[in-house]
Length: 219
Image (tube, rainbow, N blue to C red; front, side, top):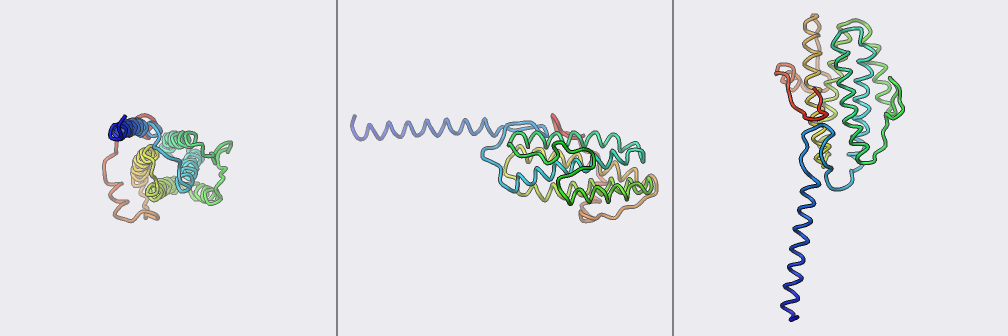
């Protein structure tokens, strides 16, 4: 084979290899409509992404456990606590997918690996047991905090399946915030945002309930 022929063969092989790699990448990074569904994005998780998943898993547990504890205060707590379990499961799917240790594994209600969340749980339960209005104020604060923390952590996410899950979780949290705030107002209670700015908070609670999320997505 002439030198030109050898070069042409090498170029052809290179083109084929690139095409095959592109096809593989497309299949691997396919879209996802559900909170925990869809193929993974290429590459290992960064340390920030791993920490974000661990924290979010326990923060969703904080919501579930607190609502379970405050359940007798208002009927809405039981339904939303069940939804928070769905949120926890969606994050657990990602932890398993990427072989990240689960901080909530083996933990009972009200028991947390993260010391900050452990203290926050105790403080929120104590505050929420004071009255039905106080309980709803706690519900509003938890959902407000969830939205704030997920939006802040999502900025460091590079994997599409994690980003999709977090988008679904925040959609669910906005709906929960609307529900708690509406119930709070119905009882004559008030709430001042502690984590979101006033404009962002008002934009959520004055807008319509959102739908969507796909398989595993929050309500």
